[in-house]
Image 1: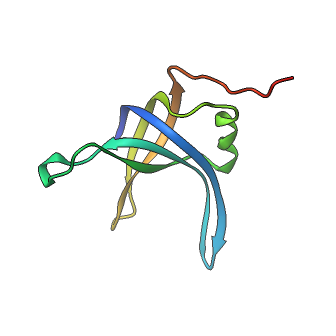
Image 2: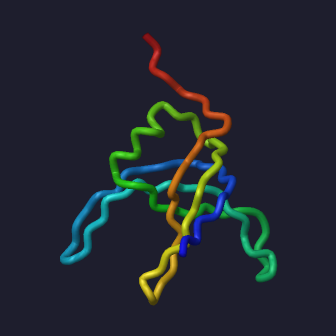
Length: 103
């Protein structure tokens, strides 16, 4: 059973993350996006949430990107049995503006 949900996100940054500590390995691109704070607990406004996206090579899709950028994303809820997390499965930029180097 898939728990994939479409979400519109405002992405404010991204960075590759690749390391190994003891038996734990990570190879992903961390994508940072704005999400609303829980108003039922007194939160107001937005906070930044990090999402894992593919592997560390996926940082290349952000090369030259001006932030923030709006994107249509697909997010999946997964669990280890103890802890749940959201993982980005796809990103489609809506109003991408590239900041290309000048020749």
